[in-house]
Structure formats: C-alpha cells, structure tokens
Amino acid sequence: MNREDFCLLKQNIIYFDNGATALKPKVLKESLIDYYDHYSANAHRGDYDMGLQVDRMYEGAREKVRDFIQAKKTEEIVFTSGATDALNKIIFGYFKHNLKAGDEVLITVSEHASNVLPWFELQDEIGIKVSYIPLENHKVTLENIKKVVTENTKVISLAHITNVIGDVRPIKEICEYAHQFGILVLVDGAQSVAHDQVNVQQMGIDFFVFSAHKLYGPTGVGVLYGKEEYLHQIRPIIFGGGMNASFSKEGVRIYHDLPSMLEAGTQNIADVIAFGSVIDYVKKVGLDQIKRHEIELKKYCISKLKEIKGITIYNEDSESAIIAFNMEGVFAQDLAIYLNNYHICVRAGNHCAKILKEDIGVKNTVRISFAMYNTKEEIDVLIQALKNPNLKREML
Image 1 (tube, rainbow, N blue to C red):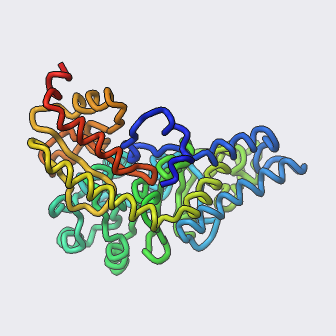
Image 2: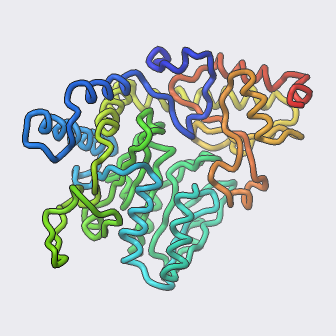
Image 3: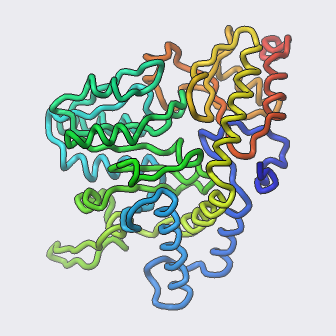
C-alpha cells in the first residue's frame, strides 16, 4: 500500500520495525524543503509577511492535530519533542503539584519506560505509591482494574497499545469507570495513533501523548493533549522566550495563556509544519484502510510463523499490528542480526519494557511491527529466512 511514497523502500530493505519508528513519505521531505527554501522565519516572532506565514503554517499544524485526535480546542494541543517529553511535562508539571504522599498511581508491568520511570521519580520525591494492575493473558481488563482501585487511587496511567504485546486497552471503559471515583487517566498513545482512530473526547481521556515519528512524521516532534481545565493547572518545567508575556528585574513575571505557556523557546518549526502535511497524507490514505491492511498482514505472518518448529509467539491474540516471538535456542539479538543479512529489519531486546519479563517470563523478544507499506511478499522472505536449515550455522 502506497509503497511508491516511501523512498527508503528503494534500498532493497524489508522494514518490520515500525513500532520503533515509521518510514517517512515524500511529502515530509517536500514540506521541509518548502519551509527552508521559501519562508524560513521564526514562529510568533516577526511582524512581517514571511513571519506571519510561518505563524499560519505552525498553528495550522496544531489545528490538524486537534482534528486528528478530535480534541475540543487547539489550546489543548501542545507541541513537545516527543511522547517522553510530553509524559514528563504532565507528570512533573501537573501531577507533582496535585498529588500528595500516599496517593496511588496505577500502571502495568508492560508499560514503556517513559510511563514508568517518571512515576518512580515522583514516588521518591513526594511519596506517592506506584501500584500495578494485574494482567490477564498479558492484557488489561476493566475487571482487573476494579480489583485494585482503592480510595487512594488518583491516576491510571496506561499505554493505549503496548509496544511489545500489542494489546489494545479498553480506554473508553476505563475512563468511564475511573471518573466515577475522580481518578484521572493518562494515556500513552505512541503505538496507537498510526494504526487506529483516536477520539479523545469520545474516549474521555484526561491526558494523551504521542510522537510524530511513529505516525510517519519527523523525529523531534511530540504532542501533549490535556483537557483544558487540567492544562490550566500545569506548571511549566521549561522557561524562556515565547512563553512569557512580560517579566521585570524584581522577578515579577506573567506567562502567556495555553498553549504558548508550555512551548518555551524556539520550537521545532519546520518539523511541526511538515508533520501537519503528513497528517493530511495519512488522512487521505485512511486509518481504517491502514488498520485493515496491517491486521491482515499480522494474521498471515502468524499463520506462517506457526509452521516453523521452535517458534514461540507471545501475543497471537493481541489486536494490534505487533508480533513478539522467539526461536528456541536462539538469542533474540542474534536472530535480528541474522535477519539483517537478508536486509530484514526487526527489533530485538526488551523494547524499553524492562519489567514485562515478570509477566511473559522472558526478558528479550524479537518484535515485528507492521505499517501501511508492508506486504505479504515481504513476510514470505522473512519466513524463508527463518526456515533456513542452516540458520544456526550461519550465525556462528
């Protein structure tokens, strides 16, 4: 699907590492060149035509993001350097000042490091308690959440889709239940926005983050969404130009309203604008069509993997386009290096989910993650390489 739009595919590679980052369509490069060649001014700084054009394009990208995730207002969309940056801004800018010692935050052992480590830091700093939702067949269920929610639970912080098992969490139902008890829900959407429709209002999400580069966009751009009532309570953790209205030598300072208050300094202007062009591209292709294609690929790949003796698949029943597996007697990284000899790119390791081993029983896996441009023919090449009777000998 749309393979001609991705120049890297001309290099005779099979790219199955889309959970780490997606390849980039030509429209991204075209948009970047257009900015740097024709209106390369700063944003929100110049009262001249070129500067005003940058403002329109930059804020236009914000509106495209708002529409893409169906937020209520553009003021609820803050550009960051990535999902990790956005999570830290929320946790240390909002929850640090709205939680107290003894308050409980619920996560799972399958969360990405970016949705674990900041909470550990807050646990040490102000005495919150980090607790874990038990997984059922590696998945989060609403019933298991109900079992562990206590009167001290104030936050549920989860990935929409996890980056190893690829389970899709019932976020709408979780939000509905949590809000009955005044519990806020923070959702890491890094693995979901490129593969399924997200409607933050309909789902009831309080905070939502994602990175542009997993959505066929540029690196160095992320999105922080928050309901306006909560964003107004966030304290900036980065200070400087662009986010202040005025300040004096006596230390009196007045900060801008949202979202400028949370976007100090010169932003990644070219890439934000280019990301807007990529959103247009993805919407034109259609997320529903992309999702159908990816799930079809996953089913096909699993059926072929199951034909190979010694293959263990850890997430056959997950609903996303991710497959985690191992081959008996072969270390995950060694298998990835072997596949590289066939120009096949997969991810191997713990995938920044270092405590997931407590649930699936292994520390490292090989991960295949699909995107719109992958094909069944590519999967056939992978399967042929894995069926090679000389596989272990070739790795020596």
